Length: 181
Image 1 (cartoon, rainbow, N blue to C red):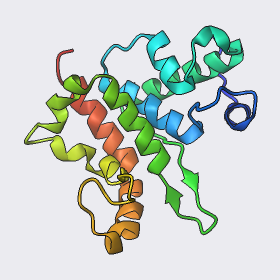
Image 2: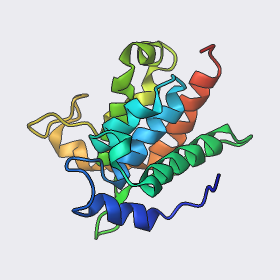
Image 3: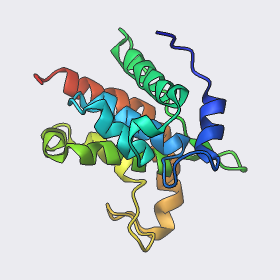
């Protein structure tokens, strides 16, 4: 099993006309894979690949499926280290600030696969706040924060939340790791 991953090739494929219509792009796919890795809830590969690509895995080139599975293994390996680390793939605006919205939407799509399982975190009085930096990036159809961030404060709040996401992901992973499956 070769764990060398060419993210540029995967990104080019996802943005190309060769990819399935409606498939995730690199950042939201990466957020989705982080959500799968953090949640530690079993989701069959065939189920989550269909969410990523909007089609069955059999319709995809082998290297594409292998690349996505390799990225998931990398994420899990980074989180399982003695000193866990999360390295999310965010977009970067021309001005230099991070754009984490797509990544966060992907993460929440993973949560949505098994929402009842995630209630243990989100309804936890002690740890429910952990999901806040991710939820900060979720907007409704009118562009308003679903957690009530005032529109005039949104840009600063999103910048701050994006900076906190790597640490947040590690804390979410450790929350789940400390509990029985």
